[in-house]
Picture 1: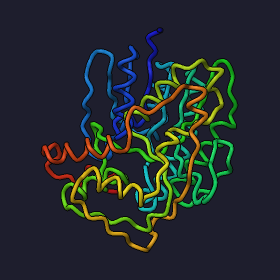
Picture 2 (picture 1 turned 135 degrees about the horizontal axis):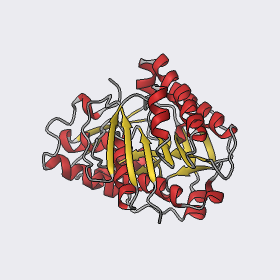
Picture 3 (picture 1 turned 180 degrees about the vertical axis):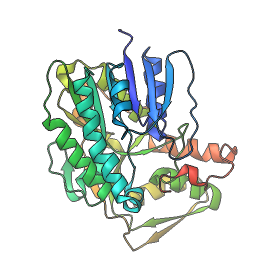
Picture 4 (picture 1 turned 135 degrees about the vertical axis):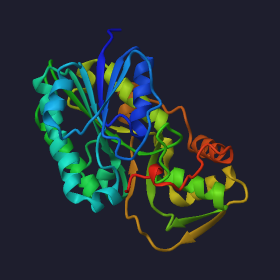
Length: 322
């Protein structure tokens, strides 16, 4: 396999560092561009890894880096509804305007493979539907709306032999990672069960697709490794049909995994997202199969907290909302 040079914009984040680790294992040379917004440290070293601290809104920096790479993955964003609502102008600049600039710059500088990391939350509230990549989008948050708009604009630029953009719509990610997040649903519930012995499940009726962070990272690697004609201009939901789960079932699984956990069901619904997603396309075309189950993710977080891996799991560094 050629020694591709891959630029990860936003590669120091929760998912980004896992992607970097996965790509380095394939023999790629990886450059991470990140502004270290959350004060995170990088766990990666080696002759094939380099790090540039900077902002994706810096057009000259982005252009100079793109010119030295054959592949680019855009992860950099204000991630999540709370972070975007707190800084809406910054969200627009980073999640939409800068995303379009990166895609344009990648095309102009000869980057052959370009992956845009999007989100299944673009589907919004879609009860009693099995959602595929062809389903219409109905985002209900600024974060999801900007991702949906960026998807459309990037793919509208077309694709050809010299430029191959792909959109990966991520399920809700969970599991241990070098830059840990405890503000994600599964990770948060596992933390509360382990440290407090009690968790609150709001409503419990809503469906949400889940995927382990290591499996999510592998989806990016499979996309970059695939023949261009299979992925150019395509959208893939990233996750597993077997990990579409209602929160009440997630609560039961948590009680089984962390014995003694008390589950409190609260009738309010603070988070309206409710969607059931099909992942048949990525399974069929890229042969993507998850290696981790939800139980695996809950167990590893429970174990890490019991072993004191995180001195203060409630510290701001483990959440994306500043």
